[in-house]
Image (cartoon, rainbow, N blue to C red; front, top):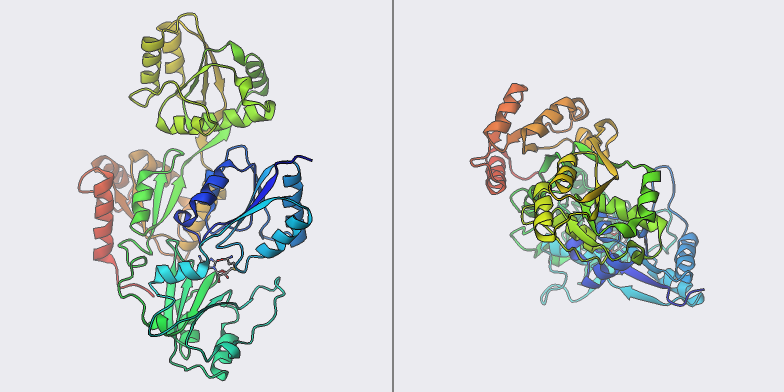
Length: 516
Ligand code: SAH
């Protein structure tokens, strides 16, 4: 048994990744194992080490969640092996999250642990709906309650009549399924029918929705709104005192579903800008990256890795794939040897640095030609052995220059292939068909062509809203027209800034008042 294993019980917050603590992020980045249930936001997992083990213990289609004792066993077993284990839980681990049970189990097995609190749903929902939970004149207590709609939980039934009289604020977790009973008991207990109630669904995410009413009206208000779990029910006079400007739901693109077709793997600047304005962005990848390599070549190159003086990475994908294979073959990063490392650009370099390896050369211009030229000019490669880690596309130019102009001895290690995404099975495409979208933002002719080619997988089903099409510039517009697609608007200038501004004006002109 190793001495250094430890379990970190971490609050993942309510959904927006910006709301986890600095400590949580630090631990996610360094953990060996991450044990998580259903997460409001999978983006948190992108911070983890590429070789970290990720264990999903939540519910999935056709399967119940893993029983609590099995989860505890997973934590104990990994920690006893000496691993750093993160147990990630929505909101705060000690608020209706069974964190106490997990801690008790760890103590019984004498496993060291640490607890990192998270922003719990009640606080997040109140903040993002502008409701002050306490108020000098209206509420001087805040109560967290559970409606325990979840049949897997066996908590005691709460008698809400006991909470009907005070002047405090009630925050009900898991309350949607039992709302009729909760409302009835509060009234029986003497709560005034005019007491304000707010319900916030998916708080802090760009799909947040909320509905407000009173104890007397809330059941029908809720039904009319179509809001469901997960949602927070907040009851009390403070709900009536909420802020008038809706700082979160009131942002210009809030509630809009915008599709951004992508030609390449990386998540875009455009997405970030749209999200900042409140849009729910659906990135639609037309190209996917799949591992593709010759296992024999990989082991030959790994065995002789010490002969290379330079290793060149032409993409972040190549880096990820390389280290995944390397860690399978070797336990110690020093097996890489003292070679120097070049990356085609900043994104590739960041991926390398995740492995605590300093990048020796990044060209001023992020392309393969510039990389080859700078290497040759600054380093002189004559007679030197170089390894190029790459995909199946666009590598000939680089290798050629290194060999002919630089007179280096080059080995190429192709590790992945870029191919057309199969939208028929893609969950993103399914989501677009089922829930529809408001707008598709095309950023190039090639994405228009890919869209048209696969359009039968992207048609909104009856009842789902059909998206309008927008174009970033004249060339893209031309391709849209050639393919018979109507253009709702073209960006006034071909830049992302203008594209986003014009998107906001487009919705201002076309949209009706908010739907809830
Ligand atoms: N430990 C969690 C609570 C888990 S119980 C925490 O501290 O927040 C699950 C319930 O939390 C849901 O049924 C819902 O009532 C509430 N909840 C979790 N995330 C939410 C969100 N983003 N918006 C609204 N309610 C949320």
